Image 1 (cartoon, rainbow, N blue to C red):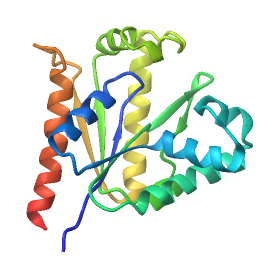
Image 2 (image 1 turned 120 degrees about the vertical axis):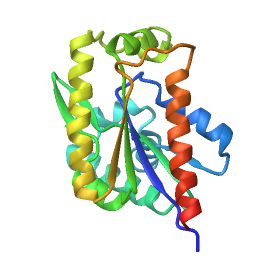
Image 3 (image 1 turned 30 degrees about the vertical axis):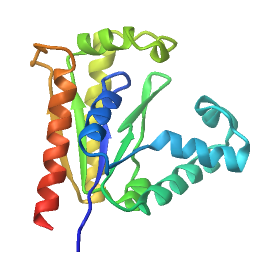
Length: 202
């Protein structure tokens, strides 16, 4: 019997998760890539007529928003095969941070691993400048990005503790790229090796 893996991938916005996951998908087409926010939006569309992700927090009461979070976790938990979940360990809100993976969500997702990507804040600022969808975000300096990465690390370990799973920190702060997308390729290699090692075990 094959025992598949469920991996949660987290990083600050604009860090390069989508690029990394695209590389994983190219080399392992049978792996399912799931964006947690997209699943929540599909549920919110059905239940509340929401049309955009930014509307969810504004238009849905807090208790109902949490219910949508839980329904998304239940839906993802039922997926068969190797699954990688693209989400956030923490979400910046009004100068503070909100948990992206609270205990009740981790309990439903039951991941096998949480992979945290960390980068030099200057690299993230450069990547964001090239991403049209991120330009509307409030500008963050290096200190704010580093604080968010620190919050991510705390929240990722707390989530792993609640979910009794492993945490892998891929820290590229002091590893400048010698070519474009080198960090994404290294991250994709790590994820693919983790999945392949699990398949060999089972």
